[in-house]
Amino acid sequence: MELFTNFPLWASLFAILFAQVVKVPIQFIFLRRIDWSLVTSTGGMPSSHSAAVTALATAIAIESGLASPVFALATVFAIITMFDATGVRFQAGEQAAVINQLLKDFNKFVSEAKGWPDKDEEEKRKELKELLGHKPIEVFFGGLTGIILTLIVHYFFSIT
Image (cartoon, rainbow, N blue to C red; front, side, top):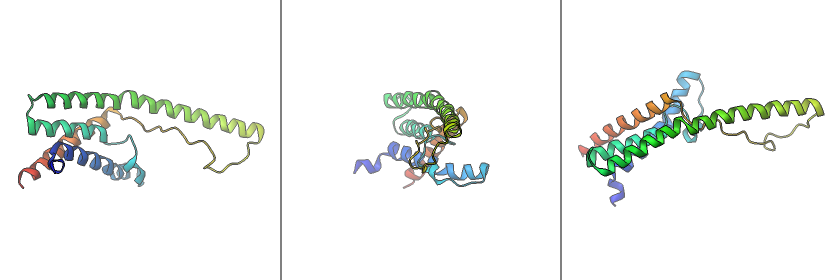
C-alpha cells in the first residue's frame, strides 16, 4: 500500500501523462490539426521526459528537503535526462530526417529509371522516426510543467 502514497512517483507519472496529452491541443492551436498519436510518441512540446524528471526532483525536494542525498540524485538524473533530450536524441532525429529524404529521392529515381512497380504501403519500408528529441524550448517547458504540476499536486495531497 506504500506505493499508493508515494508522492514523488505519482507526481512524475502525472507529469508524464499531462505532458503527453497536452501535446494534442498545443499542436491544434498552432497547426489546426488533431493528431492523437502524439499522446504515445516521443518529441514535441512540452517534453514529457523533462516534465517527469523535474516533477520527481521537485517532489523529492518537498518531501526530503534540498539538502537530502536523494534530491541530489534526482537533480543530477534530471539534468542528464534533459541534456540528452536536447542533444543526442535531437541530433538523431535530424539525421533520420536526412536519411528519410535520401530514401525518398532514391526510390523516386529507381521508379523513374526502371519503372518501379507499385507496392502497398504496408510492404514498403517504414520510415525512421524523426521526432526523437527535443528543442531546448520544449525541454524548458517540459521542466517547468513538471515543477508546476508537482506543486499543484502537493497542495491537493497536503489538504487531504
